Length: 204
Image (tube, rainbow, N blue to C red):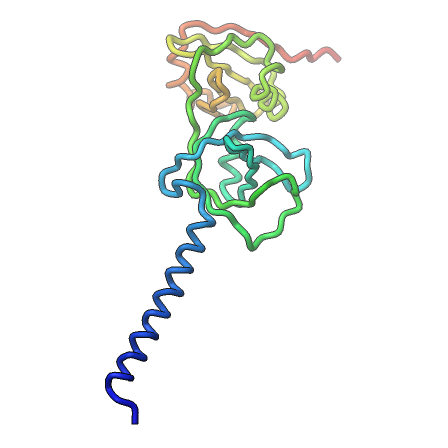
């Protein structure tokens, strides 16, 4: 008949084994997370790779790794190419991808835009900055206006059904159905002058 001491020793060993297993699982999960999962402190650049099957918008980290998000697709779709963002993520290992351009598939746990720094060059051709080219392709606007403000220039893309206002760094400031301009009155009120820089050629 086993002694009380041997029974207690067995129970203790069993508990220590469970604790070791749980600790291993926690560490394993942590290794799948991006740095600062709760801090949203990893910088990345949005790139448009919709030309490749199954890719869409990818995020390129500062170390060059390419991430294919499995969530927040609608939010990413609103961002322009070269948009700087701050993220945190968890690496997804149980999903297959047909993109093949990414280094990791990830679940984003945080995604925020980062304001660009430094002087903003005046845009003359809306097809030249990569972020503006993306907007032009998406909206095919009838005209583009530069809205001069006391801070940075804004660019107003007037589409047939939808219009948008971006700052000179490519950050979306406002969007509205073209027949509901009042939805962006707050943004328009910051403009001190308006200059048309592009008009769609509608010559038959």
